[in-house]
Length: 105
Length: 227
Image (cartoon, rainbow over all chains, first blue to last red; front, top):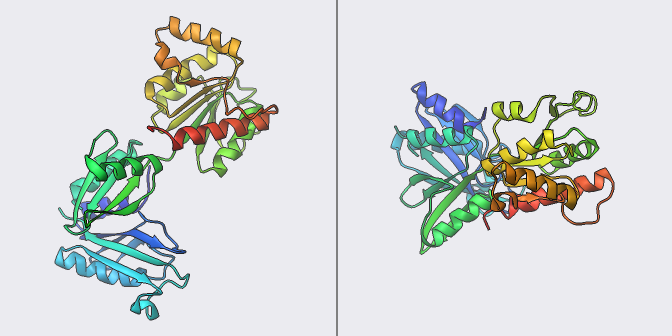
């Protein structure tokens, strides 16, 4: 059986938790996780999976909690060229785009 | 994404069926596309490509951005015959990222000692395939040389639409095999899917070299399927 973020997201929803799904949609340079990688987050900021090697997950989780609240998807970008790189960036020098969406009933 | 779409996606994945999750990034709308669904235009071409390569990507069409997330079942190589070639094929398949398992009812061949770190079924293929059916993301490699063992899984692989069906044996052996398969009701069109003599023609001679030729042929079949 597939034991992964998508299966987990379904289980969390079944348990009545509110869930957002973050997905790497584009990468440039030496990004740690390929396009299609998932991070699943609940309304309390609990998460599983990864969209980077741990570099930007904190920021994605915070955005995901907002997305769960608003119900509106959001696209985030991280990388050395980004001004947020000084706070949360990819130390490997790559850039990634992450799509964060609510999983709606 | 809707919870119902997520359930559909997980169901397809559990059934070893391919799916592409198509997301319109501007509108935030998601749709699950199955492999047998046709989509028109440039987007359709990108979707076909995602199914073929298994690569997820963002594409831009007429100013609209779409993210295509490809979910392909992991390719599985089912080897009928716990022989010398199979022993060499196991580590090669694993290196290339393919799941592999061995089936051979001859208990002297199908032992954990000869095949460490891989699933070995010391049973008849018809019994194993009932429990673990073949599908379009399976490669069937028949290498026992024994019609009693090889013929049934070859037929099963053809009817399951395995992306690769290969059988060991000379042209003469294969000729006899085709006669038997046609007599049991398979059409010429179906049996021409069997790759025999097995493996790419690289002049392979030793069991390990034949395993290289088989693995290369499996990779070629997988990466060019549906083209």
